[in-house]
Amino acid sequence: MKSIIDFFKVIIKYDKMLISILIGDIFFGALQPFPKIILSKIIFDYLVKGESLQQFLYIISVLVISDVIIQYVFHVFEQQVELKGQWLMFELSYKLNRKTMDLEYEMLLQPEILEKRELGLKVVSGSNFIDMIRSIRSIISNVVVIIGVTVIVMQIGFYVLIPVVLVVAFNSWINSKAKKVQYQCSVEVIPYQRRIGYLQSICSDFSFVKETRINDCVELIDEKYSGLSKMCYSFMKKIITRQQRVFRIGGITNGLQDVIIYGLLGIKILIRRSISIGDFSMYFNAVSNFKNSILQIMSDFVDLRMNGLNVRHLIDYMNIEDKNKGEQKIGNKDEFVIEFSHVYFQYPGAQNYVLEDICCEFRNDEKIMIVGENGAGKTTFIHLLLRLYRPTKGRILLNGVNINEYEYNDYLTMFSSVFQDYKTFAFSCLENITLGKKVNADHVKEVLRLAGLDEKIESLPEKMGTIVSRLYDDNGTEFSGGEKQKMAIARALYKDSKIVIMDEPTAALDPLAEYDLYKKLVLLMHGRLSFFISHRLASGKFCDRILVISKHTIQEDGSHDQLMNLKGLYAEMYSRQAEFYKRDK
Image (cartoon, rainbow, N blue to C red; front, top):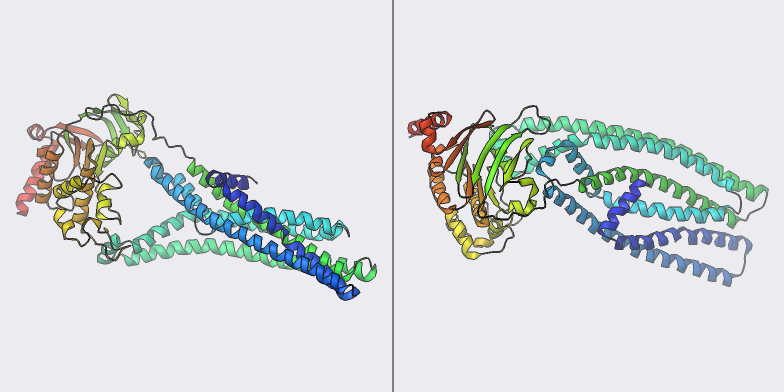
């Protein structure tokens, strides 16, 4: 019952009109069996007794017309329920994915959150959502049918319904056991399905094509897919075996039930002569409808219970509190100070800290380069600044206020960024740069020129209207890795934010191209706080300060000249890289 209440809460929240349509659908659905039940009695009684043909035709006409009207109105309501249900399913699917976009990034790394999302998706994917609406409609309609049929059958005694109730109760108990196994298997198989989904994405994602072919890892993928498929098959086999057992037992008990009902009604008509042939037909149809309605209710309840558990996961997922909201507005965005105060961070479930006792301060017009070996925590440092993660210990302050106190979207307006795993969208070039913001044509041209993408765009047939992919548009264009990188940089420049983050965005560019681009970027970012992460240390000459992260903390902090004179870790890294480039020449 709780699952039905939860489901109605979801419907009421997003589409109250669907409730009123459901009521009409349920009412006319419940009326459907009765004209046929009465019709059978009248036909048989007329054939046996030979009553007035005129009266017979009149009653038949009324019943047939009533049946046609009921069927027609029912199907009108049913169609509206299906349409509304489909719309609500798409709406909920979007809301769920939108929740994922808004949810705190750190939460998306937690398996229990991902599992709630997967189970919630089951409600709004495929036919599950519509099936739940149908189940609720069916349950209520069949309850009304049972009440009406019971009134009819009570004329000859309730005992006729006893075998039906016993058999249905037994079958439902067995079916419930099978459904529990089915649900448990469906939960246990989720991790394997998620891995299979990942392998399928590798096969369909163009970005993996070169890796899989050149490195000849197709057999490895086949092996993993085969193993996971066997695991999923074992779960499905368990479910189907249990279901087949239930169907076989149900077939036997249903057959016995029909024999008993025929016998009880036969005794009435053949021995006691207390009912007519028409009554026999009517009562048998009534009992059959009683049986079918109870069976359907039990089946719907079990299905609803299974999907209802997923509805609870959907509601729980949608109700996850977003800790990243904050309420305070940022006052002065032109002059500010950011401070890391004894910041520690470790990933959920990890034993060791990625960053330890980070203490540093940045002002609104500084150019900062962050360097360190792979895995030192450079990108994690940036993720903390962007509030993608929360510090395990310590605080990050903006103008003396904990950054988590600021309204999240207002805080993010301070930033534009280009990450090493940047993404372009299968949208137009213009949309990829502006991302829905107000279009300033002159500014668009300027950032394209600065990013070195202006000539490429001008050479395209549709210019800024060209779609950045051929995946959904035959007239689209596939950009090279370097060109996509330049587009991501142009996007960051267009946002015109106060803090710019470049997390190895120029990895696809050659060293000279990167050097020239950084020279332009440093000039362009005058008056902004800028962070650059790069393995090519020569670009550090353009920056005011260089942070060297090693052994989970900041080991060195100073300008290029200061750190070279220090003859520490940075000087050693720089000298080795310079020697490498000399030999490479």
